[in-house]
Image (tube, rainbow, N blue to C red):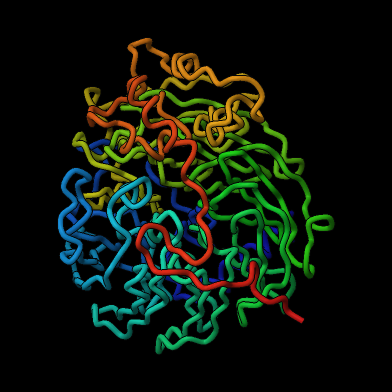
Length: 563
């Protein structure tokens, strides 16, 4: 384990290639681990009037995560189109914004507006309305900032906000037209961008010029929205590892060629990202549920030689954390601790309290947990931030909010030097250890209840074999009693599903099923929306981008194997 920790530290230094001030410079911090590298503990309790250092209005919405670089906090936003499902507006008015905020006081240092390259994926269906048009988290090398804006390409800015270059990476669409979400990373002098929706490609750009260094296209990238990590296999070898539909790939980051692959979750999409400790990679993904540990390295198909264990744990959007021999994940209000040596579930708990449920009009919790001083911080879309000790019992510490207003928090928090940075669809917040006590009237009661051994995670109930493609019960055996299924989830017996009662695929499609837009789903609404929820969402065929999107050319399943 000591050797693993040394390798982990080395990879963090290698992948960031940043000055010492760039302490949370990419999606989920150092190498995507979600773990704060500094020793200053973050606050465990705050409220709108306690330990809230500053609050800054943003020029638009978004779910991209803040990154912290020295005395600056950077975030991307969008405006002009796609802010209201009922009245999305005119796509030609869509704008992107790159914003630099002063870390100390929260003032906007500079803000740049970028015209969107059109047409974008439309603001309708289950995908884009869930996250919008600013979903890709920026990355920094400590000097310049790099952003990926889907069909508008990758762009670079210096500290003063001057745009250095802009490079197109493709204008295709995934079959469902769910939009763009994967975030870029840095490796040596390369900006590596997962343009999975835009061109089914992984593309490396020279970070100084924006010129393309290598590009690897493969149909296996389709329906993958995760962000890659870098894993040191040996002193002279680093693998770029990424999850794709059905598989996990290890790629040479210098060339983009495939070194190894193994079987992954049997899911039609891959939305979470992988994490690593030493040379072992861990992942949790898929509605059908699969957790996995695989040792990086090897050549070709390493399923039989390098996969250490697999499990049936599941996660829809949130990336897990590996910390002290445990893999921690959150799926809605359910937290799970897994033994990283065996893959066995150590504990699972359902956390109650706060506003509960998603809280926003779009449904689903999209953020991932982060960790500081042995405590997990997990933001729900409602704005409730759960603080939980990273122990086998997942001990609750507090539930906090930065605002009493109805804002949507779908971005993963950033933690730097004991400060927590949260972004909503309206504001950027900084929570700091200011020594202030939360007033009694602003305290939120936390009342977690441990799930029974073997319980499935909240987001997957009803997703494992129930009603798949409209075929009926588990594995298609027997009839599917829709009314009984509904009643089992209507915990308060009010004839509607709302809050925590909405889970799994229904959460993804809540905006379409909830036809009267009252935030709850009736049995009749569920009956009418069932076919679109469990069927008709296929992966799409080749040669089309869904709806009226650009066609996709035929591509090999995987990038070429390295010889």
